[in-house]
Amino acid sequence: MTQTLTIRRPDDWHLHLRDGEILKAVLPETARHFARAIVMPNLVPPVVTAADAAEYRDRILSAKPLNSDFRPLMTLYLTEETDVRDLRAAAEIGLITAVKLYPAGATTNSASGVRDFAKVRRVLETMAQIGLTLCVHGEVTDPEVDIFDREAVFIDRVLDPIRRDIPGLRVVMEHITTKNGADYVRDGGDDIAATITTHHLVINRNDILVGGIKPHYYCLPVAKREEHRLALRAAATSGDASFFLGTDSAPHLDPAKESACGCAGCFTATNTLSILAEVFEQENALDRLEAFASLNGPAFYGLPVNEATLTLEKGAPVAYPAKIDTADGPVTVFDPGFPLHWRVAG
Ligand SMILES: NC(=O)N[C@@H](CC(=O)O)C(=O)O
Ligand SMILES: [Zn+2]
Ligand SMILES: [Zn+2]
Image (cartoon, rainbow, N blue to C red; front, side, top):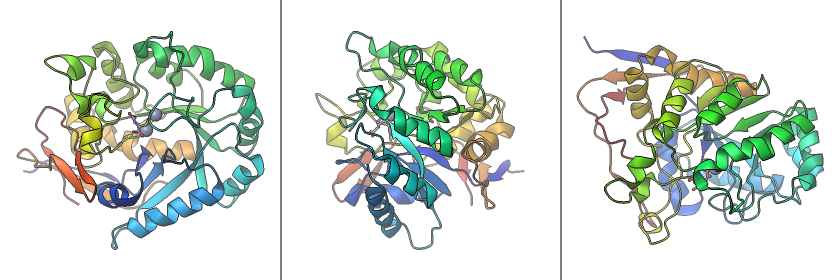
């Protein structure tokens, strides 16, 4: 008998959809399986005002496949100039679901991010008052700090002080890559949660570097050593409500990745659910996939879970495209390095 797994339809709590031709090509990959996604605001220029978010939302909705009821959950990109009234109004009408903090220079398109945290204090206080979630790219940018330590140092130097300073601020530590991150979030109470990506459950830093450099495994925060990957797998499959799926699927055109100075980002929208089912099965935790992908995220954001369901079916290895074609060029799909036996049946 075929083994199947039916879960409530999942959501992606951290997604890059980009704009223009790439948006048109990658949106169907997410909309096929996910009901909602938190859409990252790191466009060029970034989505900083309510008006920007409304326009971007409309471009996403126009690019959506006709038969899809996918719902983008919009975010604002926090800058030192963010206007508190504009942000509050955007939250009140339900236009935005979260605000994104990028330390300036930490990652792709983060130049407009925050340098001086005192300058965003009023915004963060307002967010704490109205219960609006702050999504954080948790890496320091201090050139003295080794890239593999930047997440752990961010927790001590930036995140923990902000949370002590502004009690009640709801924070999602995005795409955690370390045991330090998982421990901090697990022990951090109800106001903090973390997203975990698909690829960080699969690769460690050896996968990027051993036997030749693999640009399609390079993302930020960069994958760490094996003990950290194992800690992430334990966190994701634990069922703990503090952890949920944010794929951080981050498409870049192949020439931008396969370059002497390649961009950070793994594109996983296409095969994420097959990979996750494989990983959860490897961890004997298939019964916890629904909590990670479909239940814990809405609970943290105070949103209803999806009524629709999604069924995965186990069988012969699943075929998926190596690349997605966009009108601007190809985007390589993340290769987990092992066969995937679970396909999305409906
Ligand atoms: N994760 C990445 O490596 N890249 C993301 C930015 C981000 O989420 O930090 C991107 O926008 O390409
Ligand atoms: Zn990030
Ligand atoms: Zn991201």
